[in-house]
Image 1 (cartoon, helix red, strand yellow):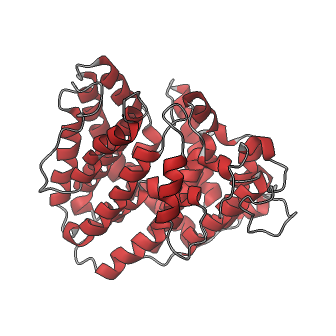
Image 2 (cartoon, rainbow, N blue to C red):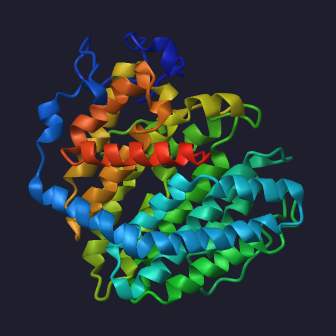
Length: 404
């Protein structure tokens, strides 16, 4: 599967896949051109009344009992970031914290937690995602061995999930190291919070496996300047879940997402979690929800990736039509999962999709075609989620904010 490297997605938006390249699963010649804006009013108006009730209840729960906790956690880490002695590391930490959308998105998983353990859940997922954002930026910096440096830096994500492990020197191969204890504090905050969750022992093995996938992906996801995606492709071909039918770049996308970690942490906040529930969550999120998440992130990061010299994972699809069908397939599989707290997971999925499709960067013709296919697959809750995120983005822009 996969074949020779495809042309950039924008350049082949209307082409058929070249001979030998990965072929679209949709029958040849069938183009996908639906987009969210073209959905009829009656489709937007129709919806599952029970689903809308769950969505409304979840939003209220988030705004009243989770968002205030998120604001406090982010204010704390912002203050810590501003105190970092090294100016490069300080700038990277502040940049990571400015990406409020994915930090608040991580905290949304706390709706899966009972009120009695919601504070620890928010603390853990915000610390983990803050570390992820920070390390993602660090790994893009110049170093003599970017793969080894990326792997060493990202050990922090593994240690953050293991309350018993001693912290190594994460900066051993990095040109800067004076962070004033910022990264170590993120790690300790996450694992201290995890130790207070009643079922963390049940999820810890699967959670660590998800983090191990992230570490490998992040260390191999190199910019063109650092060496490109050859090593990532070789690894992803070996790691693709058997029988999934995923191409290597779709498997790689699934490996790099943090959503499975957040879902498992939030699940651990509940008492009497069964191993079968943990396995069901892991099977739903990896690869389906996680691949959809990372590729939607790629969808809105085309311009940013180009500036950074980073090959966008969506560009490996041979055409817009192929990418649209592949994303629709991922969304269908993600939506079909049978999970404990299924309504809440469905709201989280719709919120994630709504967050990305409401981005101004999702308004290009290519992005709208792909987004429309995803929108059609995730169900009737999405229009409401889209409206909420568009309002939130408008308010953030009005206040001079960014990265939302």
